[in-house]
Amino acid sequence: MEKAQAEDYLKSLLNKNLRITTSDSRMFLGQFKCTDSDRNVILAHTFEYRIPPPPKNLPENKEPVTLDMTSRYLGLVVVPGQYITKIEVEEFASQMKGRGASGSKIGTPGANVVLREEDGRHILDLGPE
Image (cartoon, rainbow, N blue to C red):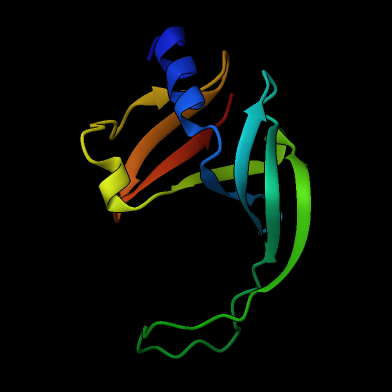
């Protein structure tokens, strides 16, 4: 994706709710405000969720497991880009119609960022630089 297209896409995300997962298994859910060339992301009205470690004794039947995730309200936060492993855009299917962005590469210079669609959500995968 060209720089102009990447900038336009990032602008389209302004004020949308993003779910950001970090390398220490935390998840931040907040309103996207801005980013920089180091991939740091600023979110407003943010909640932090701690994903508990998987249970040691999982049954073999592979049924869905419900996890109790503790959360706290943080407000305005900076999520350091070096720790971001996944960014998901929280949108309804009606908001995504007509985009056709599945599999597009986006991001800041030097970043390997891939946008894909999964289960009706847009997901930004951050690869190694």
